[in-house]
Image (cartoon, rainbow, N blue to C red; front, top):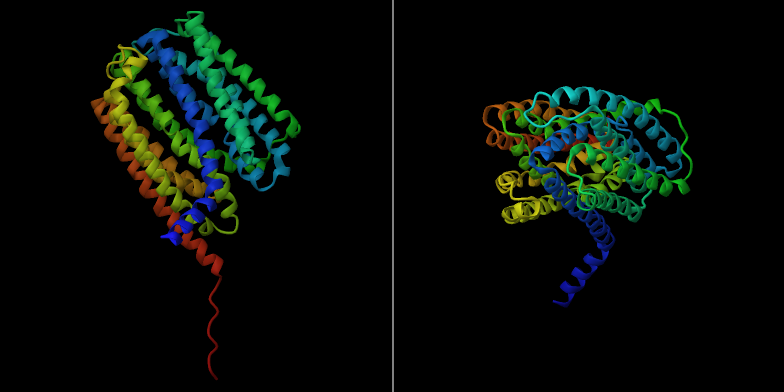
Length: 438
């Protein structure tokens, strides 16, 4: 018995740094998710189901656009800086240039496209200045803010990265509280001005935090453009798949239903924090371990799979139990919220099941394989979700979501295991033939 206790204590001590890092990472994301939940609750009550439903639809488009902004340059910063901190100035300048160039195009295109789309729905109209503020604040400024966290993660400064995450969530919550509770903002046009201003102030604060690390060297690294585009394409596809239902459902259901469904979807997005906390610590480690071969990091990915699925099950059960009480927080007008959330909560388990596999593919430099899996699933999934939503919203939407997540789990692990086997054989080298006896 005493020996068993010593073994358990030794195991706990050996994993203590990892556990502490995860608790801190998870705590920061949990705080961010809680702040985001409070922010949504404040906005849902202040704007009402109709205007909040319109805000949800516009946010769905900006969620796609923010993944395009920067053209995936954050991946090379995280990957290369974690291996060589001296490359930071050039990679920071690469990111800033691509964010500026792509951001300008996205704001202009987003305003033009969304102004036409908004006229197709049955909800309230929105003017172009409001759209411009929403796209500037939720695309360009948010991408700059997210870059701060990426820099700190690449440099191994986990506490600073956690501070950036918590601070941004708290800033959004304070902005919403000041705007809606103190200054009685009740329209989307007024909220757009407040949100853009709050994000601008926090982006400037992030620039101050990064200033001691050195000035950026402004130049586009052409050799990283292809990898960045492959990386961005995966998240663009996922964002399209994750938000196409919000856009299509608004064409066939009342805008108030979009409000309830949008709240449920945003709660689900926030609930991925347990998986995200694990992944943000895992990615730099997988990049280091896979430097001499993808197969060397496979044991870590397998352990991460078990941890992620356990976290997903716990989170899903928690959401299922708490769902009936959420209308009291967001408002009684969101009466469909519990049903939507209970139908969606199981998807987090499936996300946890494929997250470690695709992270290892990306961290090892196999963005081509990762992009093929996620882009194929997202492209086909977007069509399936749109058709299912059109035919039988919202039940058809739920069925389509689960089918797609299961397909990603299977594809990700099949491809990863095959590539790991190939990597292992390459590391072993050619087998020398036995000498032929004379």
